[in-house]
Image (tube, rainbow, N blue to C red; front, side, top):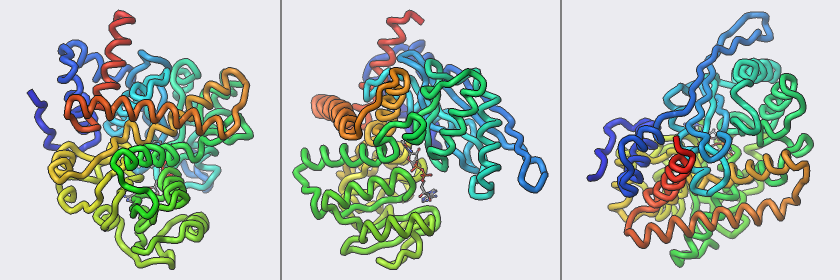
Length: 417
Ligand code: NAD
């Protein structure tokens, strides 16, 4: 029996629904379902920060480790005013299915602090990060749980985590990934998620017989993932017709000029107002006429309210959990292909795995090797998903979750939980 579609559009419902669909296909019993869908550990901590003006503010931080059965938990840290335990739980579970799908030796976790980092100075952000680490460092570590960048965090934030963790435990570069190359970061990590989005889309368009050169691409979100994906698509000859970030968007059906756009976004910290196209809203980007739509901002942006209006032929999910189950169904009926998040945005965690490996061995790789190994891992997972989807006549998402959930269930059984 199909699991009932959730009536709520929250991230937790999305990941739970997709998990249950896979569990049905695998005929998992209720004990195994409970085991696999219950987070291993959750923490909520207060994070006090002495502000530059001398006042004290107290933020709330979270870390959820969904599972460590296949290896240490692995997952990003997000700074966002709307972050809460429910969101972090959902993202931790999604990470767990992602690391399993691409078959790297990690479980899944996620962290977040409810804060608008734009309101904090650099020093305040550093104090926030260090105080968060002080409260949870006993739960972190190279063989326990390894954070990485996510929304509004970057290589500088990862450096503070590395430094603070090492102050308590001794020099431990493998405790966090996404560090600058100077401090043990991997070549290619910064661009890895966007590059992976490109690799997966490239492979799928080839199978579809749709040329990448000249394909019209629209991207929502122009941060680390969106801007890097934009660059790789443009370099391959695709036409970037629309981009948007939280402050607005820009559209040009002849194609936006990528280098001036990247330079503008770097200096202005937004794409809104870029002179090479017309202004459009961030919602309009999702509904713009294009071949490939790349949601690369936040979760739950493609819902029953706008799924009927999306005009892309392919949706390459760079953000985590961007599409609700109801939207999935509408898009399937309309023949729109979806490349699911747990595969499409996995390039980041794959290169984080390489960074962790390089830190543990203290042997460093050239960027060409990083990119080639990432390509191999992503394409192997893509083929496994695509073959299962074709054989069983199921959507890519269900196939991806089925491969992922099966692998974790086997590990649970073998370990004899
Ligand atoms: P980022 O902070 O670098 O960029 C986020 C972008 O989204 C910014 O351009 C921001 O303006 C935009 N944005 C935020 N709210 C928006 C809104 N309401 N409407 C439109 N745009 C909005 O973050 P990122 O690291 O690029 O992450 C983007 C997405 O990719 C997230 O869903 C994240 O979980 C996912 N992801 C990131 C990584 C990684 O390696 N950084 C890996 C896998 C998945």
